[in-house]
Length: 390
Image (cartoon, rainbow, N blue to C red; front, side, top):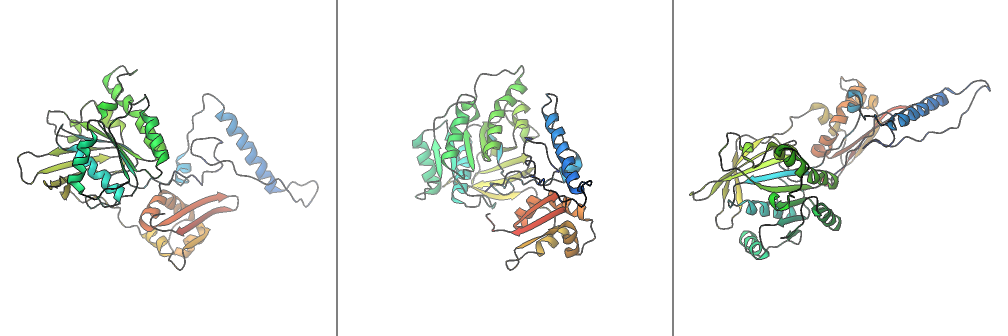
């Protein structure tokens, strides 16, 4: 399952701030050695309470801006969303663009089917789950023929298809939200095509703003639901040196999404070949060369311009991972104790910051769930070995 963003180490964050943890509970019991002496620990609690009150008052100021320091940023644990297709597709809003009548729908059906069945796509592992394909330029009979041609008598009840849907801002978001609510674990919603769901209403004064504004509701919805929404779109007729400049419309479309795929198919070749250019916030820019099986219409990966990016090995993370095993699946203690256990030349606060930044990588590459919290007693770290799909 996708893990949401978790903040565990920001020192007493403001109440109600987006994504921040609630105020910690403090005890008011005191033990005094002298009736005239106040317990120092109680003084600290009073100071914390005063600070909390100041922050609440500040947040109620209409001019309040929720900003954190770089130190607080490094002192916070964030968990990135897990990929839906490893190194290719993450939760968020994406564009899949190509020329009309070049087979975009076949590629989209292939992507959805592989995710629904948990089968790797072009050599990339997928996160299995239900998918919804809004084939708004098709009819069910054509979809039936295509899917039978592609996969024969091997249907999946995790792939849902529809040929009618409402427009953006006029009910589409509610339809998608309702589907995801009824089908927990949904990974991908494909909308084929953007033009079919784009409303003509816009408050924008120029084309760039109108294009950007059109995509915002679906971007917000994808983030809210933790799914990928793939919007099928067209490319221009004119050739472009940069394939992403070929996406129809202004840069407001390309700039508003988390990633873009541009599909180009050759003509007059046997077997049919093509390319898929991909770029995004979480994806390294890449060009994949594809070969189509002209019988099944399935696209097979041939090669890429460069190898897909992998993070280089990190000796510190490797050392942390070596602490855990099936026989000893958990470790907890202070940052200082962890430095001593690892026998590394690193300050405890530097180690905790490094692990905060790499919490998602520990989960992804080493199957370790990392947590870090801080109290008056100091900084506490916990590590737990988890199942690969946890």
